[in-house]
Image (cartoon, rainbow, N blue to C red):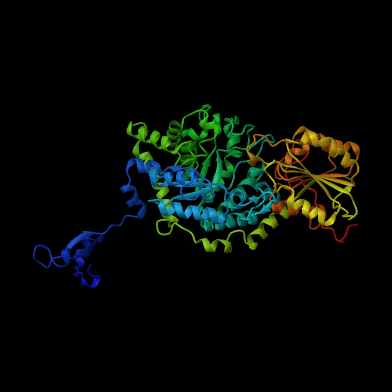
Length: 609
């Protein structure tokens, strides 16, 4: 090929007439036996424009699919490896949502799939409390050896209790940095639902709180933190999942609020996030009759909600992800193909976690070929997705450096921010007889009772470790829904012989159990402590509304999550290691209003008062 110097010069008039052309000799010299150069048009199309023109209809539809891939070690020949390879090489999907795994294992798998994919994959993950939400918490049994991982922050409601947009921004920033380091471009965060229903079994502490103004402020700061550092923030769950009493993983919730209330509460944080430039929004599998003319169907499948309201009225032009399409609110009513078609008709760009990829692709393909869905509608979403991939420069660099991960993920500077959020979020709602801060008498016999899910083996690990530093005679007991009834009587006997009982409850909405309530045996035990006059403290590492079940509790502390940062902060707060200043961001009917919280100054004298 000749160099630029070899190309014959053109006249000024030729340049003016053909601004988007170049001159190149054909066959290395002349055309038709003369020295006249042939004018070839310059390709000025972007990568995304060229790519979409090269795709078949089926390939375009496949770009809309984002199936679930676990971040486990999957060697060649394993079922897990074969499934992921089929998604990428045979189905030609456009992206994946990564589930649990270690940071390096997830990064290695993402790299491998990126190399096998003809078009760069858009990679997402649920990272509501930072990268540690999916990449931390693994333990080696039976010794319960924690395997470490990414930074795991306290819950978003902890940020609501701390009430500091700067901390929300930092949490978003660190989430983006750690996600991008392992090859994830789209953190599915933040949750922008306003948790205004104490009986909500699925949002709860995943929300910043009940005040739409506070949720808007913290949510927008979180969005800016993610997107200033290379991630695509994704607000969820539009148009709002906070006022429900049904888990959409199990059934279809219905929100019956009028449009005026929805505008001032549920929709407000999403509008603020859109104004902050949020790049993604995830739908909610909830029915909101006031938004779709009384139709009782899921918002995910409603054009009135997803196109008319979100895109046209509220001005959102980013990527619209469905919530997981294998959830019972959708999959229990429709097949994979029909559900995917309806979501596309409603305005979705990405079909997240279809129950089966191929039927979802075939369903949409047939709908286009049969005239039900215009091909232009498919092109609209594909173009949006390819543009984002180009903005992220994935067409130039789609893999990550595995050796660089330990210098970004889970580092001390990041965990320090998580620890600060933990400390500043601790909220004291009751302190009968000024039991807190604790005296810390080393000879005292103290009973620590932890209620947790059977699988949550780290619940109480860091909290009790700190208690034992002060109370060498500490006795611990762990209960769950399987053994609560058998242990209750024995715990009451131990409590009678104790100088202090600390009850910690690890009840959160992320378990998808359909409930955030305590078993009756646990609430009865706490009520008996009050009746017996045994000094006691209840620390909630999750659901803040539990005090409604034991109204006479002596001391009640909210720590908001079972993360290591929250556990260490809660224990430190009991001993007065720092000033407790958190304020509750949600009402507890009959017990607390938004903004309540007892200020507990740091204990000045070491060793107690």
